[in-house]
Image (cartoon, rainbow, N blue to C red; front, side, top):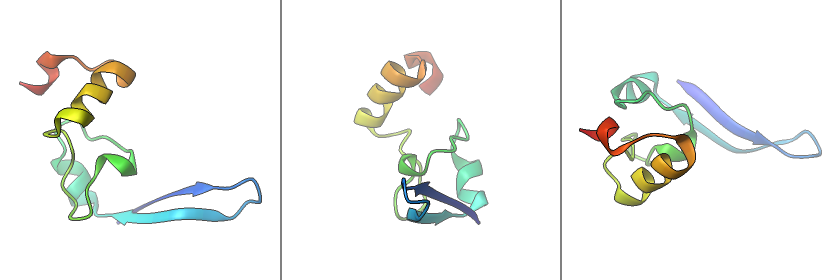
Length: 66
C-alpha cells in the first residue's frame, strides 16, 4: 500500500488515502497523484476530463493515450 495525504498549515495530515501498489502499476503512466485513482483502484486514464487535464496541465499528448 502507498499512502497519500495532504498536510495542513497546522501540520496535521488530511485527506489520507491508501492505494495498492499493484493498482498504481496498472496505470499505463504510473501516475503518483491520489486523485488520479478511483475508489476501486482503477486509474482515470480512460476518463475524457482527466485526459484533458493531463494534456493541459501535465504536458501529455493525445499520442500518449494510444
